[in-house]
Image 1 (cartoon, rainbow, N blue to C red):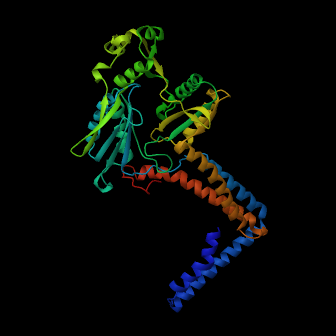
Image 2 (cartoon, rainbow, N blue to C red):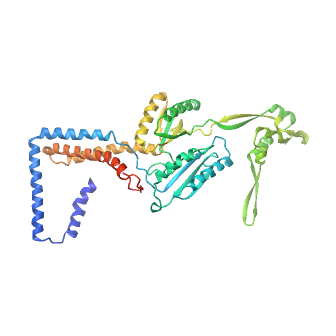
Image 3 (tube, rainbow, N blue to C red):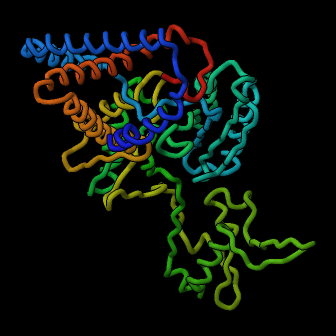
Length: 439
């Protein structure tokens, strides 16, 4: 309002003095003057009539403003429309404990799918990031004038093909216009508790199972995974002491041969290389390979390592996350075609109230957090703007007309947002959607 008033009092008169120098003919000046006088006279007559029936005007204003609630409650809420940026992000994840070779194998299967899409210009893969069993791909589409399908249509075609790739969970996503990273999913719901992670896992699994029944949520996942394969090696200290083997030597032997140890570097032709000591992959694939490893005991005698340790295959957490100093797990999901972020979050909140115990807390991340924060701020901004319009309607004797103006603005705004998407669906169906053209 301050900027608008400043422009009206300073920039606008200056522009009028520069742009309105051309003199009009006498006939045109008379016509413009007559039209302006008629408009002013009509406004005065309407104002007098409204002031003579203020209760009726006030009732009309309340009814008009109240009818806007009908359209507001039926509007889909989004942080920002998904634009055609010409980029599709493909996320894929293998089973826990998968090797980099396993993940790379299925990444190449996804590459074959990308190569079959005629609108794809180029693509590249990131395999083994952030964990060995996960990866991400970026697909760059041809320019808009060289393709007939939109980014969203191409992603919709790729989705069932990627989901049919065995061995990995893969799905495409469109980069968000606002909030979150390029590959982040729209839904990021955080469940917090002070209880152990085992109890948190039960909460998350129950909530995820309920969400899976709703068609708006696809590619549901959580970062709380307690099934990472792990080999637990326990040292029999009595036997180690009997054969005279140092615990330090035993630990370093396991670390070096199984985990790998850098021992030196060397240079050749101006390039520097690291020298790693480690068993070949074929010699460290299963716990039975411990029988092939020996350590030097008392008197230089070689002792089979499997006689000194006991191995057990167990599972362990992949990662244990915290949020606001509490144990936390994040539920992520993408939105199905046609689903709105606002409706999905409302259903998620209601389901969380039914499923989660009273000791659990909830929060948001990424685009979901941006949406919740901006929603609260925009409501306050909207109410302040309406208050300024109402006050600007004039003196107290004309504030009932201001109520009609405010109500008309509300109805016009919500009705337009409600009707345009319907018209757009039927009129522009099949057209390529470019940035800025989304309704």
